[in-house]
Image 1 (cartoon, helix red, strand yellow):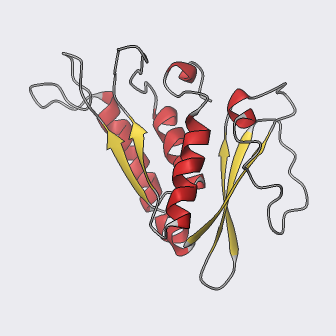
Image 2: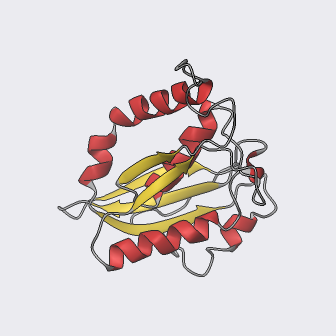
Image 3: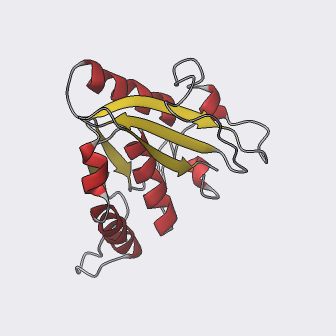
Length: 177
């Protein structure tokens, strides 16, 4: 997690992603996800991502869950704006999304070649004692990754496994601490 992100993304988020990705897989449609880029301010206290890393982190986690369609949820409940001011001047979040999309454009052809999402596996880093979000997917995550003997990491990781049309396995690896 990027520091302070707990106020934006619930520990239930991975479990919700898993259910949505599995439903898409079981019903033969592409999994799509929204990247949370709004300031809700109500009882859930969603906040705007404040760094490029926060936007990328959400995006890549969704890709590890096999997301083929991504959209940015930018409902604006603030007088200052989310992506742009009322006068049309871009704000930081506009540039964060722009840079994230540009980075994805460099490798999306690889990701979309893997048309079957197998699942995800979480790995607790050697510097972590526990991860509540990982606990909530423990019963449904993959028990192992095909062709991977061992993973050792100092940081918490999520690894998504996919298969292409020729049976090759691919992995999306995302830091989760």
